[in-house]
Length: 521
Image (cartoon, rainbow, N blue to C red; front, side, top):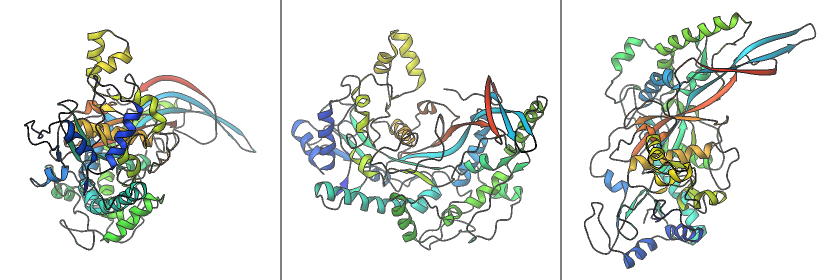
């Protein structure tokens, strides 16, 4: 039986946020197979996705059904992701000096005082993907390596949950939509998965020094060819229109796919066992996964990138200016971000208990926000919010309620009453990011806690089209991809003293002095 989350909760203006009892009832109905469609059949007349009257049975259209109509576009490769992110780095970095810190080094022989700049900047630490099916990620290599294994492990996990809670038989996870005229002709509750993983360009920030870029060699020695390639060779093998720019696609289960070096082969059982252990708290990443996802190729491309030289020249100018006030900057112009390229931080399929069952299983502690029609967790383009302020001249809380919105951050689940898949994908991506930004991990949620505090975030869309960075994910556009696959580079904010030896005494705020442009709203 294909499980399609068909909860009919709406957060439109006319309905506001439903009562707690209604939300609980919807959560229960969503789990019991066909009960929600049966109830809708008895009270409403069904419609097709195009709006034409059919029989009394509501139409259930899954993303898998749509995907079978035509071949799926390949998405983007690891090399394309790395190249696009590096190109955006100067515009998305928002490097600024926000203060100058007095620090002291104390030894038995002397006491040394010095000043060092306090800086803030963004880093492309994560990649957020929204997709209707577990095995339909837009990142080519990632989907080839993890897609099928991820779906199988998630199905087993979710079946255990349903069997334990409700005694239901084997149930397959799937995304999709549920349409009917019972509540409103624009109602379309859809379900989308959220996947957040480490962006490979995160290596760039931690490895950058004033002398160049010092990227670590991969721990796995299965691929001995780690010699830096000739840039001209890379240009000849690259393809600006897409395709396999990393040199190969991953090889899983002993079968090689792609051109050239197929990379180390990864047995399917190895991937499945690792995903199962990840759901149980294991965070030991296998180096062979990184090699399979194109670590070596991405590393060599970044080492030869012209972005290294442009940023190096910019930071050396800052170093020269600071030396006049006895300022120290250390070896790197960037804050340590402790990023982990390629590794998953959030996999909604393995967080099925909360992500699938939804509220009140998900975010019961956010009930006041969820039930409040004037809550501030709205996701919508900034232009629409500004338009509402001019038009109505009303309090901000009421303006947010009256102006169009894509969705809300809470509850953090996969279901949403939003017929536009691009807007739905953006809301789901923001919900996943919100989980990672929690200072304390919510109960019953499964995800990896980042090693840094996510004080701020910005987004640049990677798929289906590339856009510049924006603080508001809704400002990155609403281009629709036929197979409901979307991806954004998630830039997170970091701040630090550039020279971190000794003991900080006081930080004097200045500026901020922007070294690179500010990220627009």
